Image 1 (spheres, helix red, strand yellow):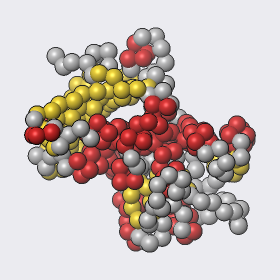
Image 2 (cartoon, one colour):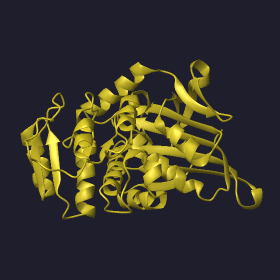
Image 3 (cartoon, one colour):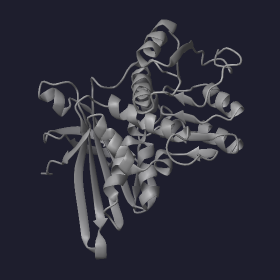
Length: 328
């Protein structure tokens, strides 16, 4: 679903590269566009989809192995379609403020199928990158993620609609402070986000699933995700919009010695390759193409995916980790 959008086409291309024989169905509202994507992939079919219908408007008798919502499943018909057929389901667009219906639907039919809630930044890629960095710690006290989204890299119409919906739901940020999940507003939510070239951009804490996933995966009592929209370091160099996320960790290493690390995850082609990687990793896992079978129930990316393997796949797309610029 949403297979003709930026995230959907990118994820499908990665899955084709990793698994050349995997059948793919590209579902979109424009059959000609869907067919073009399918033709480019090879071993793929194209279908039209109607999210307002419980059967998604798909022909009767058509069989699938999973349902991927690379756009907001506003009626939950994609989720219900998957549950009624016992198929794994992955979503990326609900966000922290919209996941309650998915969670309740999964709880009510906990034995129906696995549901991967991946409405994190870049479909969980940033969480997995942070957890890969966290492996050298014996204890983590503080996690701070600082992301720059280039204003020209907000995605297609579906991505822009997601950002607008989330901002309408709440302007407050969610942090974990001294072990307590806390909503922050006003000055407490404000932050400066430092780009990889040292430029400071005005940002703020946001309500995002990365905070809860990282806090509960590491037991870190202090977790925050700050977000800024503006010109990326790539564009300031006269290049295309780039992706940049800073990952700051503080805690203790071996023997309890204080340890602090700062590094940036960057990509010269913007957020699309990392979002596509997050989706493709989730699909690969749900289909049992890597790892053991996934049990029915609600899952998040860090619960299913190996951070080291995820980072390996990210770097294959052109992502890199670099040193973070110093704070003034």
